[in-house]
Image (tube, rainbow, N blue to C red; front, side, top):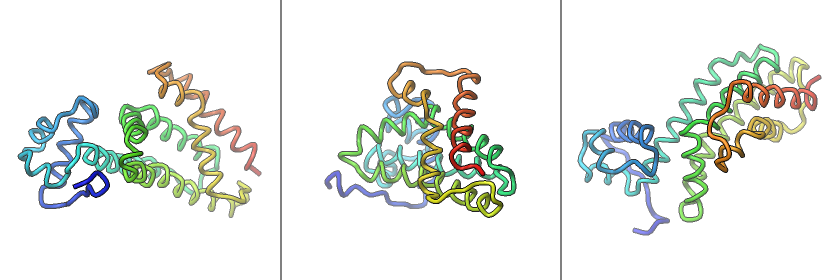
Length: 205
């Protein structure tokens, strides 16, 4: 079996394996997690684990996808489509920045960067379960706000992507390059306010 043909098969103990992987990856990170420990946490044999996930990277990305989807769903549950843009965007920015700066967010990003050449489907899977989900949810809100004449946007997808990038300003490059690992709430609030202010200056009515 070549790298390009690796696939994930689901079965009776799939969710059990995934939960075991979540516990180990969250505690030890990708590099520190061993297949033995994951199998032990999942209470399955290594043979059973490998029958579902022939490569540790695929197991990590499947776990990360589930976490990303759960976090995205939780974050946007709190967004009321009737609320004004500044309120909604501030809440969305808090949620997005929280994930960007989290250990899981950083682990997923680094694995994607390191392995995408050999496993392009890993990067695609993360994009579909993370950035694309956020874009679709933001576009849904923008559409409602436009109908109330609170926003004026011609390219909804572009505007959603721009807002996501504004939320990464300063802090994301620092954590990616190891310049700074932790940030105060004051530093985070500064970025969020700047992102919302700039977005509203461009698209607010």
